[in-house]
Length: 190
Image 1 (cartoon, rainbow, N blue to C red):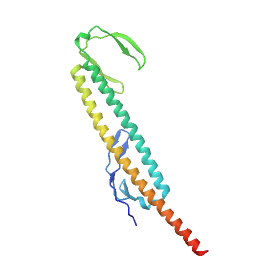
Image 2 (image 1 turned 180 degrees about the vertical axis):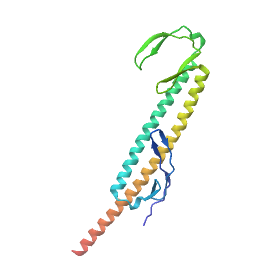
Image 3 (image 1 turned 120 degrees about the horizontal axis):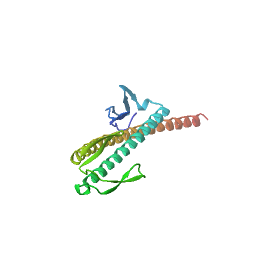
Image 4 (image 1 turned 90 degrees about the vertical axis):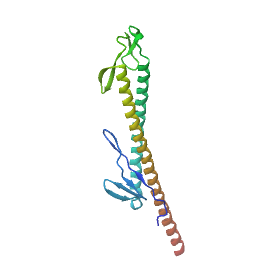
């Protein structure tokens, strides 16, 4: 008999364009994927291990994406700080312009009320400081929402792994009980 506590959790899935949380309910030791219900207790040990490996890979991918989102949030915060430090008094001041992360050329600030904002994938647009702040605020909020979704997916995937671990542990107990039963029967017969 199954004496394990039922557990309910959500199965996150990743798409190429980011995270899509698909609410697949896992109840007791069953897994519901793509409309098919799989009873974890009825799965052979090798399949459980494969499923666990798959969920661990998913967890690594989601965690990596989460770290990249948090790095983006930091970059937006740095940009907002730099933007806050720009004033009309900077007009004509000497600056270093980054060509790469470690290569700079000298330059002068011209029209400090206008900045170039990267929209993504190498596209830039000129904005005034106020609009640039608004843009960065929107991007920061978007990153924060996506980060929250990623954290929910991380939590759900960890619960998946724990449920699979419980099913594996149950299989191991069953195997040991069978082996012990066979050992006892063999000892009684000799």
